[in-house]
Length: 245
Image 1 (cartoon, rainbow, N blue to C red):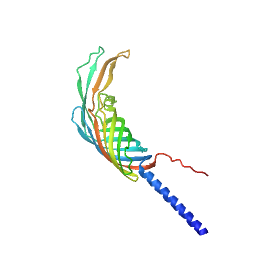
Image 2 (cartoon, rainbow, N blue to C red):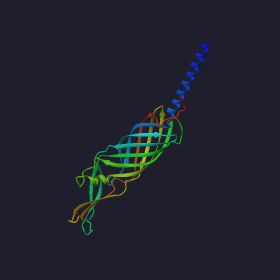
Image 3 (spheres, rainbow, N blue to C red):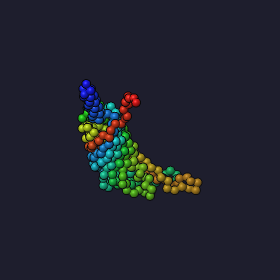
Image 4 (cartoon, rainbow, N blue to C red):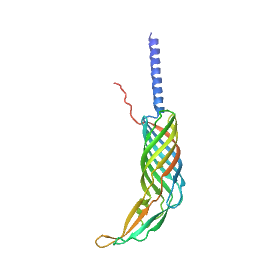
């Protein structure tokens, strides 16, 4: 009789362990309430004031936190270019408010850096194939800008950076904790920007001569197509379990 009880107890324990393992595997593969980190690479399409639409290679990383059918994605992209040209205008204004004729100021830059935060939606609940959509925004600026008219670089720094709104869509193939994805992202255009710099003040501190730099560093929307891999780091929430001492 004791042998039967031991055998029955062992069978119950084995069954419970098997159920727990099955539930854990199902939860890990579902993609819900999970942390993911990943890397990606692709191309960005952009246009400046002096050249048509160009392509630039990009690479970056991202963090994705998923719930049941929604998520939050934080990403950074770095574009790698070479002496990409652009141009803006500037005028000099005297104390009477009379401005000089606009003159062109040429610039070059070596790349882009884009920071994005997006709310994601996963409309189809499938453990292996998931289309996704995203809406959000971020900050885009160029890197390696050529020197401007002032040593502190405030003119080119201001003209070359902007906030944007963004939309994205793509498809992910997931096997266990690993996922391979492709994504398209579009951002709104930079728009017109202007920087005012005081060149000379009188004894009372009033501006006598000012310089105004203005224009569009880039024109139109940017388009980015990337592909990459994500790996799951585990649950994004703590499960509540009933129990006692």
